[in-house]
Length: 302
Image 1 (cartoon, rainbow, N blue to C red):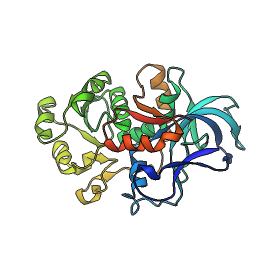
Image 2: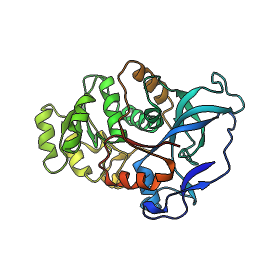
Image 3: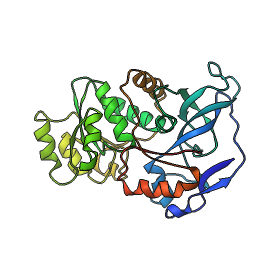
């Protein structure tokens, strides 16, 4: 089968499609013929080498954490899922490899009928990350959260999950993405200097929590939140020096998938898609991701 990988750290051009043996599922796993899979900003940073000291990376590295497709092989002990089922989910974090013709999922749920393949392929990663962070922050109805970088793949999903919890969401984004944030139920505001004053104007009573999806501004976000303990980042490697938690997928929030299915069924969760690329244009997808100007998720479609 074809799989997207890189054999050395470097610019987007090191990403290429390789012919590799097709995987087979182990106990409690399923294999899917992939229809779409997600590209995360974190993987572009792994590829660049920026995270080589923070993330153990064995080369060649196969990319892709989440995917959607048609089940074509069942591992031992799998029940409740049949060949031909349309599902979405994630692969083992240590092995990755979802950007391929076939992928082995270790967690999955039925693909919501309202979602396109692109939406389903880009859903599991942001849903897991958002659910994990919002659970850690203890976000509940009536509270206010600032989502920094709210128009990105994770931020756009986190915004909707926070709204579904009954929270008020203030989201930062470029002006061009403010209409998207409004459509997701957030109050949009701009990036940049003066954020604390802009948030205070929108939420005079303050915010209860901050989710940082963008990185680079933790001191200002701590000032907005009032304490480092009320900020969680998924993007800033300097988190520990500021007393902020950098959330990692360990353990994974498995309950994120059925929650996403339920919200999609009631029309409260959609997956904004910034762009679709064939596997053979994975390098171009990485280039777009690195601009940080893609509103929503970038997906690869075999």
